[in-house]
Length: 443
Image (cartoon, rainbow, N blue to C red; front, side, top):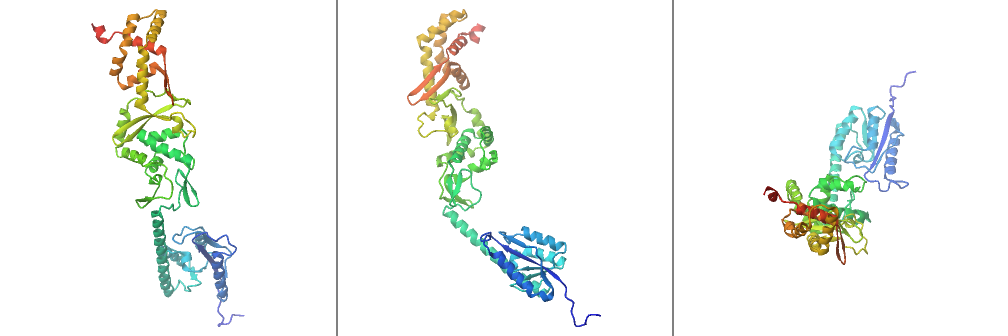
């Protein structure tokens, strides 16, 4: 029996419900925004049951994703199902749930048209297969994009105002700080590394050398990765460490505590104004530290030579390695930083005094007699008298060599400086001084 000519054949249309929420706030509630959208869409599909509409059980929910991009997992799954012919109608609560961008939506409509898929908004009823539906869609979507741009401007204005007040506005937590109650708090362990990087850059003038030095010491960033040259340059350019908040090139007093002083910042950036070649030349021409490797404080910590630049002047210091590695105790009284000229002049004065001491000359004369070797007593006394004028004529590197030859250890304490001489070294120096000069040999 053939069907009645008045009876219309009803085609089954598979409907996919798509829901979206820009933030994940409230999604853990028993009935959230996505549930409300899905319920409204399901009710609309039920109302179209006479037209053959049925819901697809597969959920397409994007919670916490912006409508300004198509890179959303549920949307991509939906488009994949559209392309393989599993969907006939896409149902949303409002068109901006699918996209807030006019350009992106135009791309979506092209994909839907290519696969004969209809798009329906339950609160803005229209059909994309008709010209009127397309006109309505474009008008509504233009308003959706306008709303998105207004919201973006509002957020940017709020962000700028907050930065001007010195507030931290989130993002990657900078090295040297932690976050508590949405505020930056100094992480003292990391802050010591930050100060060390600033100071050592001033001294070395090279991010490459500093990176190698930090790698040898096993220093890493927050993520446990090795600190490289790029990390160092970003760190020393960040005014955050001065206690400032920066927005679009302008800096404002921040709510957080500074890690480096203005003096250290100015010193480092004064050196940065020089070219790498100039910084390398200064590094090469620096005087050889006289006491490198032989000076210690009374706790036994080595004192390492360092440099600080102020303007065009270079200041030379010896700093305890405990300070450089952040191991100084609050009750420690041993010297941690000394002016290099002061301590070096004191050591030189002690060397001059001891070499002139009669007991030293007697000891050297006795040692050479026992060995039966040159020089004789007169040559020894003459050699010791030649030390002062000879020292004044020596180049810095040769002075450093002679100092290490004569001095075994320099110990600095609150009470003063103790110099331990090498007796054998004095004998070797006397032997060198007693050798005939080139002029004497030529004569």
